[in-house]
Image (tube, rainbow, N blue to C red; front, side):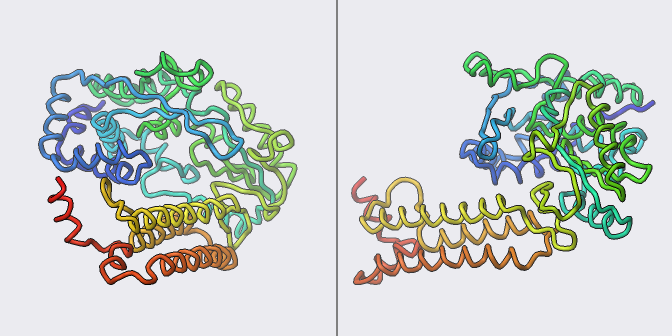
Length: 421
C-alpha cells in the first residue's frame, strides 16, 4: 500500500511542471479567451500556484463546473463534444496525471503506461511512434494485411468507477483517490443552454470522461488494458492510439478474425467500432498500401505521406493567413490602424512560417518527398500572389507608408494617437 500521492500533487515542482504542459496548449489555443487567460496566469505565476496549493491543502479541492462545446469535426463527420475547465482545474488534473506517471509504487499503472503498442496519452510517445511500429510490423514481420477503426463515442463509454477501482487496488491514499474521482466528473455549467441532442454527447454520472481533460487518455488506456493484451499475439499486432487502432498480420483471414474479436470485446464494454463496408471513412480492411489512412497518414510502407485531407488543410490554412494579411494591408493603407495590432506583410510571412513548421513537425514520420514538394509548390504560388499584392499596394507610396504596410512599427503613429486622444 502507498501513501503520499495527494501530497505530491500539491508540491510546487509538480504544479509547475503541470503548468508548463497546460501553458503550451493554452498559448496555441484557437480561443482568444484561452490564450489571454494563459497569459494572465503566467504573468502572476508564483501567486497563482500558491493559491492552487492552498486550495489543495484545504481538502477537498472543489472543481468548478465546466463549459461544454461541440465544434464541428472534419466536413460531414458531425460534432466533437469538448469540455473546457478553468485553467486552475486543468493544472490540478495534469498534476494528478504527472504523479500517476511517476508513481513507481503503482506497478499496475506502470504496466499500463509501458504497454508497447499503446501510443496515445503515453509520455514520450506520439503518432510517429505508431508509424514506426507499423513499419516494423510490415518490414520485419511481413504483416501485409491491415484492418482499423476508431471506437465510436469512446470517451462517453468509459466507466469512471472501473478506473477508480483499478487505482484503489493499488493505493490506500484516500485523499488522492477522492481527488482523482472528482477530477474525472463532468458537470456542465451551460447544460441548460445547449441543444438537447448536443447535450446527449457528453458524459453523465459515472459513465464517460471528458474530452479535453488531461486525465481522459489515462482513463481510456486503463479501460482498454485488457483489449491491448487480447488483441496482440497469435500473429496479430494491434497498435492503438487512444480510441484509434490498427491490426496487422500476415494472413488476411487472421486479421479479419481479429477485427471481429476486437468488436466483440468492445461490445462487452458498451463500445462499438465501425465496419469498413458501412463506413469506409471510419474503418478499413485489406492490403497495406491500398491508400488507407491512419492517424493522419496514408499507409504507404516506407514513405507514409500525410493524408490528402491534411495536405489540403495546411494549404487552406496558409491561404487564410494570406487572405487576412491582404485585408490588414488594405486597412493600413487607409490609415485604419487603431485597435488590435494588424497582421501586415512581415507578420503574415512569420505566421505562415510558423504554420508550416508546426505542420511539418506533426508529420515528422513521413518520408514522402513527393507530397512535400506538392505542398511546397502550392504554398509557393500563394506566397508569390501575396508578394505581388504587397508590391501593388506600396507602389508610389513614401518610405514611411511602405514601412507601415511592411508591418514595421512607425513611432509617429503612436504620437498621432496620443494627440487625438
